Length: 499
Image 1 (cartoon, rainbow, N blue to C red):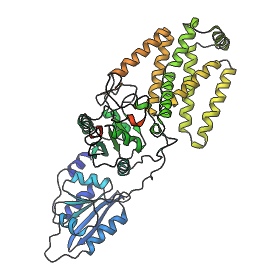
Image 2 (cartoon, one colour; image 1 turned 135 degrees about the vertical axis):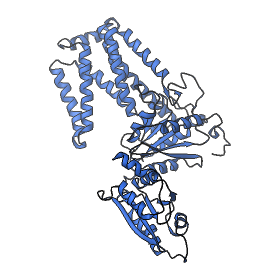
Image 3 (cartoon, rainbow, N blue to C red; image 1 turned 120 degrees about the horizontal axis):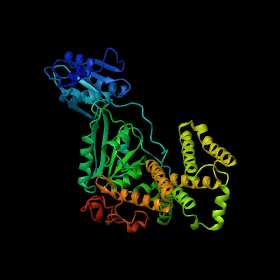
Image 4 (tube, rainbow, N blue to C red; image 1 turned 60 degrees about the vertical axis):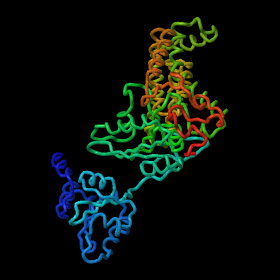
């Protein structure tokens, strides 16, 4: 069947309308597929056939501005009705184009456009009639902010591109559309500011998207896995955001934004570790507040990764470093616990994230109750049964809070895996193991790349940059974009023609 379909979609249209209609009926399974519609009509005595999918195309737009216009058009005798004539004289839809290749016509019809086949013409007119149901622009669900814009991306690629243009009112904003997936194509777009984004970065994104050789690519998550620099790295090498204002600020810094149909978020590349600690409302708050909140997040990241490992190292190998009163409290709390500290921490970590995952997957009405009540009941029961020490519950809770302070979901999951690595190193070698784990993680971060850009830049290696990195200094000092921007970027000058 695949070979038969490939043979039908290869080549171009013929001039015989009946042959073309028969061909498209076979491709779209017209006898079985009830959504495939073939509407025959005439324009000034010339037979036409409109091919579209019901539900994907807007029936009102198709009827009012295309079909009715063709049937009511009165051309002088001897007029040749071809694709160009229909576009210039008859059709009342603004977005029309001609196409001869059958495969491209089929892809357009499947995406919601209408193909108008003409008798005696080997070209079809593709009409922009997409009108399938879509979720309206609303609040973001994962990147909530206290102050600032409240709208987020939706599943419609066209709507998301429009949202970006609302925030970046410049003729230099370029959007390029691609199709990825060899069997089930998906529509993807990249957006960048011409003259600000480095041409090397834009060319790299373009080349990697074209290099994807998969039958189907579902969503930005799959696209990210296909085009990232190192698929074995624990931390994400691209920023995923569902906020148009944050994506717009990345465009102004010279980064490239990737959008995909049916994905209510955007991918930003290249990024650094510091970008993953930024939140959208940092830019709307006074610089003192934004800097303070970023320091809180950085502290939460360090606590999330190293606190359990340090607890194991100090209580198992380096008890002499603890104050006597604290050591006595820990020993008394663990007097009746039958498990080693490593097993105790692993049990609590597994229970903590099991409750979190269950609360996320369960219905919203009972998910929050499960997360709070379940954690309290299990923790109290574990302490009463002398399975877990009370101080460990405090440590795991603080560790979880530090992890939840991360604005990026994927970054938080990567920190969990890094924390397990530090825990095992601390259990094996004490503080030496924790230091060794920290060194390995730091070396790994310094060796990572995001679209060829060093992951720890502009710290390692050092590069000139805007004072909006870990700390957020006043806006009058932020006169230049980040080091991602091109050296001759018009955003670096006061008199640039794009200001």
